[in-house]
Length: 89
Image 1 (cartoon, one colour):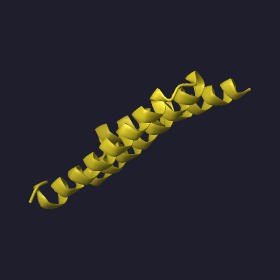
Image 2 (tube, rainbow, N blue to C red):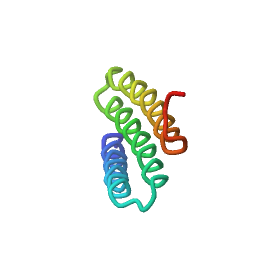
Image 3 (cartoon, rainbow, N blue to C red):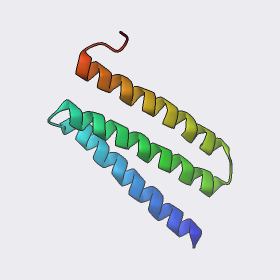
Image 4 (cartoon, one colour):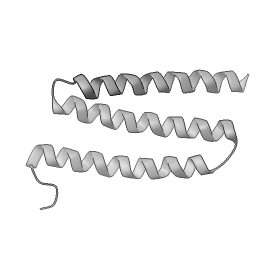
């Protein structure tokens, strides 16, 4: 039963990733694109955790932590670039 729930959850997060890609490609403003990119990072983290549960290994959890750190830094850097035009002051 848990395998069916994991497959359903992976399919839902995969569909969410596709919707985020559509929003990145067709977003009318840069704020929409930034928000879609940040949501995409969250969906990738969720997929990595689900893969870790499915395969029973801790490697996917470490990868999820790395993606979370890089995703946070990239979102902050991109927002600073959009607002100020420069990342490093």
